[in-house]
Structure formats: structure tokens, C-alpha cells
Image (cartoon, rainbow, N blue to C red):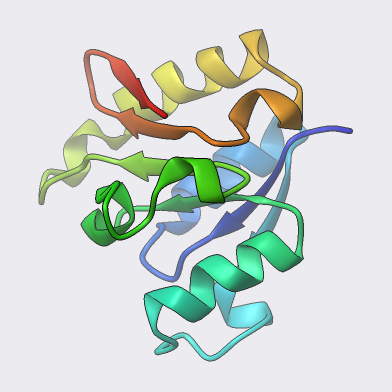
Length: 122
């Protein structure tokens, strides 16, 4: 199965478009649940759709609140109020995704995507 993502409401269209343009399936929160839905509903919908959650919301990077082992994958983009770094982050993320194209690789993992590296927490 190809990679499938559930883009949180805070994820810019540029990210959704970049992932879609390289052939990944990307679902948007606004198409499935109200955009003001609490995080617990967002991540539950990602699970229900059998997708990897992708978010800029720092809450999903909290491994106590959202233990990676409980989910099918979480990608937290670490933009930190610097949208100018998004193209570099996307390049790094797309490279990582292309080298790990199977959904099972992401199960139980949190990927913290920064400009210079991707940290993986389990």
C-alpha cells in the first residue's frame, strides 16, 4: 500500500500539494471532521482512515500525550514560526518518504522533521 496521510488543519496547502504531487494520498481534516475538532478526534480519524497523521501542532510531538506505539504514524513538522524553512523541510521529508515507502515502517513512530534532520521517536 502506498503512503497515506491525514493532514491536520494547521498543515499548509504547500505541504499537502507537495506530497500529492509525488503520488501520495493526502486527506485533509476539513473534508472529514470540523476543523476545530480536538486533537483526540483528529488523531482518531487518522487511525480510522489508516493514515499517518501530519501536523505542525506541537501537541502531537508529545510522546506522553500521544505515545507513538499507539498510532499508525505521526509526522510533526517543526516549523516554529519560520514558514520560510518549509521548502527545505519538505525536501528532507520527501527524501525520507521515498526511501521508506511502506506504511508499516511508520507504525509506532513519531517523526520530528526539522530543517537539518529527522528524529524518530518510538
